[in-house]
Amino acid sequence: MPERYRKQLVRMISQHAHSEIVGMLPEGNWITRAPSLKRKVGLLAKVQDEAGHGLYLYAAAETLGVDRQELVDALLSGAAKYSSIFNYPTLSWADIGAIGWLVDGAAIINQTTLAKTSYGPYARAMLRICGEENFHKRQGFEILATLSAGTPEQHAMAQDAVDRWWWPTLMMFGPPDEESPNTAELMRWNVKPKPNDELRSRFIDLAVPQAQAMGLTLPDPELRFDEESGHWRTGGIDWEEFRRVIRGGGPMNRERLAARRRAHEEGRWVRQAAEAYAAKRAAAKAPR
Ligand code: BYC
Image (cartoon, rainbow, N blue to C red; front, side):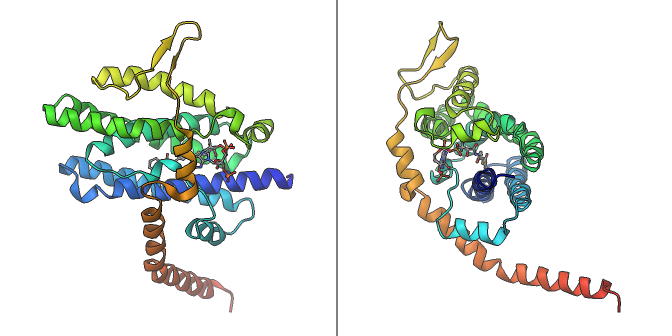
């Protein structure tokens, strides 16, 4: 395996794993305040799924000869990136709907193509993750559709969430192709089967009619259907905001890293106990 291929895969898979784990925080914030038992159960299951996705992805990265602790340290020190989207706050219950519909919806588009990536352990993790993400997207859509069809206050809450999450979701697909330093190399090796802009456009084409079906508008006065290409076209994306967020200057970057560092510290005794138990079992099995 060429060293550069390995390095690129470690970068991409580990950042993906970090995104899943940090991505538990914005939604986890609403578990205690879900509006009904049914919603609470659904949200708990979703957040738990994201932890599982992080686990499959760290395990896939480990097949490339890296140590998981090394990867976690890179996240906690701020050296490794995770998806920009998780640096925005969840201000109302409708945000849980918007995350499921938009953020998981965007992730599915990206991950369905990654299921055909040239590195088997990553591709196989994607297959399983995509199945679960489909459930996430549907529960988000259903939350938003219910709110949108509810009282005027509930409708306004759904619209406000979509207004805040739409543009950051479009940024999830990464910078425009001409400003994406990794795309050409990753596509040559079929690590990344499709470029950023093509996936972003595919997502927009799916999201626009879904927003219309829910009676919600997308916060873009320049959004229009281009008859010639057969695709929806948006107004300009604020790439300055994207760069600021991935440099650590988003509204929630500090809180997200602080929460992960705290969880890591508070979980130290669990890791130690698990290691002690594993060592004890191994010793008991060893031939005397
Ligand atoms: N945020 O050359 P480019 C989920 C960085 S979680 C932050 O285009 P590449 C969920 C990029 O890393 C699913 N950074 O990069 C979980 C690079 O910097 P470095 C998350 C970004 O790799 C919980 C630089 O910008 N999905 O679904 O060719 C709850 C230049 O970019 C971002 C994945 O992780 C960004 N948005 O393409 C709910 C998918 N975009 O590393 C839901 C896996 C770019 O050189 N990853 N950067 O310092 C990928 O598909 C690709 O890595 C990307 C970027 C499309 C994200």
